[in-house]
Image (cartoon, rainbow, N blue to C red; front, side):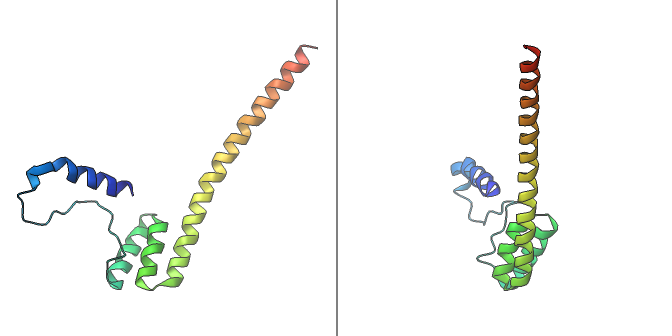
Length: 112
């Protein structure tokens, strides 16, 4: 999604200078959508996305390619990658809470 916004911003910034150009404009590095691709092209994009760790996108492209089992595997990997980050954040938050509680208990016992 971010890539599409950057591509749109770049094309918008070009303004009217590009209005006279009659050739197609190709934005290098823009994410390719699988929805309007052939199954073979969607499979190629999905394989590339999976190699780059973009499992959600890979799963979507595998579905377009008709590769449902590969799509399932990619979606599971995307879910695992997301939950791993969520778990790490939760553990860090819990550790911060425990440290704060320990400080409060220490202060409470010191004032007695």
